[in-house]
Length: 84
Image (tube, rainbow, N blue to C red; front, side, top):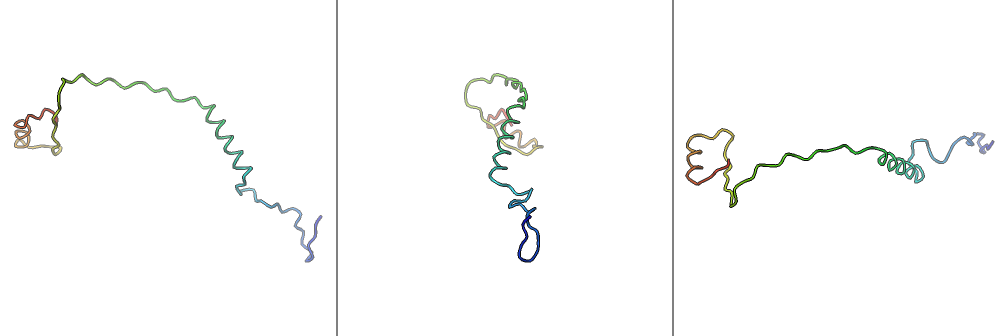
């Protein structure tokens, strides 16, 4: 038992507290994380449905409000826009 000159006992104190992140503890956490990641089975994903075939050539589109008026739709048709 170590006793300081003032009579206090400091033998039970460790240089690192239980919550302090030391290099050794960081390495243990990193290894544990790597092991856990390898044990986890990846989720199975399915391929998305294929889009319908489009005719060849340049596609012209136009951005309009979510509820376009008849005048805007007519303007789009006059430009030859097929997609809104």
